[in-house]
Length: 332
Image (tube, rainbow, N blue to C red):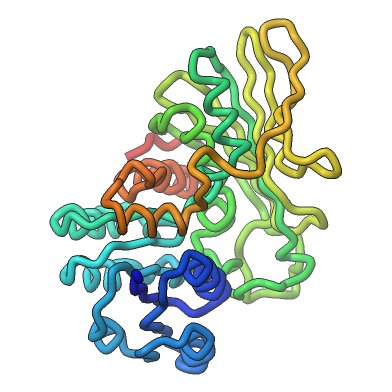
């Protein structure tokens, strides 16, 4: 039985514990700076160690560690795991910025551990199928959108809407579908990005400074131009992704409704309306794929390793920097 630790006992820590248990692995250690949160998750998981001390967390032997802390807290737990040869699953973004991301990557590559980043859309059957359809096609444009209801419901961790912790909606929300765009195009790299945004909701909530409305443009190194629309104060949430080329216009309808998830549009002159299976070709989600990779040492199960995720982080960082320049920022 694989033995796993979780640092960060919030919503995502609890969700990951459920997937770990479903796989048949065991959470043996839980860490959170808020001890009551760690105790609650640790009790649920039957963990051996429950602590607010990261050094004590690493006293128990573990096969893997899941990091679900806020983005500024990456380097210390990554270093601690790598020093002990423990495999990693890291929530998005892989780091708060590229400088810290490079430091984490140095530890990961020196240790040689499996280090996955929690981009679950890469394991969604609908995007896997869209990637297959585009393998031999020319695409010129891609449009994505992400909508959540944070500024209406406020049912989220407060730091989600605090830019100095979350990075704002580009890093906290848009990153998922922007990474998915790179995935369906074959893990292409970003070239430049520009974004504009405004906070014009909940003006009385001065503790929150993240934009609720945002538009972004960017270029990928395969010649594709992308636009992204983000709103984090709208009633109905979800992701949208559409690609356009000389002989195609395809949209991943991930909401699906009564008809289930589908890919719709046209391809080479013919209408296209294809349902997608409930599972991807692996039959594994991101957590189960990571656990299986640890068991089998099959790194091909990891669709978003840390090094590749750094290219998505580079796009995010360029877009965020551009908001202070008024123009495009080249990707570092």
